[in-house]
Image (cartoon, rainbow, N blue to C red; front, side, top):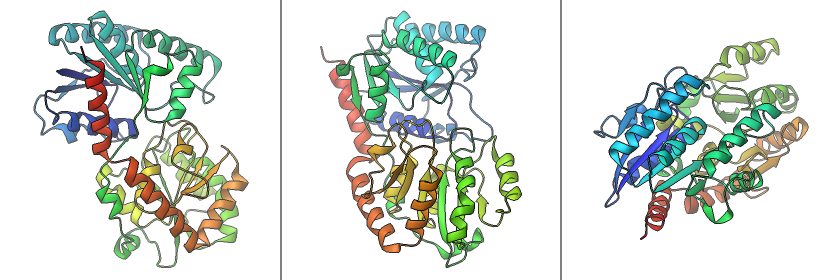
Length: 384
């Protein structure tokens, strides 16, 4: 069975890591021939393309498949994808992300592909953008939804949002958590030498945040809450892992608030090094306003770290109040300060929540479970 995945770009991010893990795992399933088509992706956000270099014939880069809306290039991409699908005749086209999700599914329908699957990694519409943009994206998703055989949601919250928008029917949705290799996270250690490398003292409490330095990721909220947190817990250090277009502005804001000694910016970090950073964190905050189900939440829990997260999209399916962490109303800075201080001051609470989270993730988030579930869905959808 020939399966072609399509994604807009392979920058370092949750949807991209999910896709790379999926295609690599599925390639090893009996009877599957898997290819991945991606647009170009490079720059400050890093690239995952190198993870696929050893897999001959797996990755095909399409220069016209770009994230910004460009009618001429988008139409050229639609035609080229249609041509490729007609030529290669895949039994399944499986799309990911916004632009590739729309163009890939429409092209697959034009080419007569029997089964069209789309994974919803995060919402393409919602309160994070204006009415005009929401109208455009909902209309495009409804159009593509009409030719979609089945949807995979990384969280039940995505299913609810898309059904509420009139996209698909309930029986067309399957939740499959975004799995990852658990072993490195389960083995994460609080390495004194690594703390010293980042000028973190043995008695410092480390509040970690792992996300692209980009709008809607919540870094500004953390900076706004930091003075109140530090007034009560001056031994706290904030470790921000990631890079992006907002880095210089955020660093300047930390300096203007007089917080530069408390905020550590690591810059771009390869995915395989994330467990090392989680090991020296005491808790993790995730303050995104737009996320399907952020991989950093189960990754932090796998490392035994409690999480404080905004109740956005699928976060509540992993950040379970007083079981694995604390869930907050988006933008509630007093509550953010209170919960961070509560955890910073209570090592026993951190341990209890972290251990509960570790067991939950061990049961639900292995990459093998994710790949097995996708493979089983493929077999079900192609059953004669």
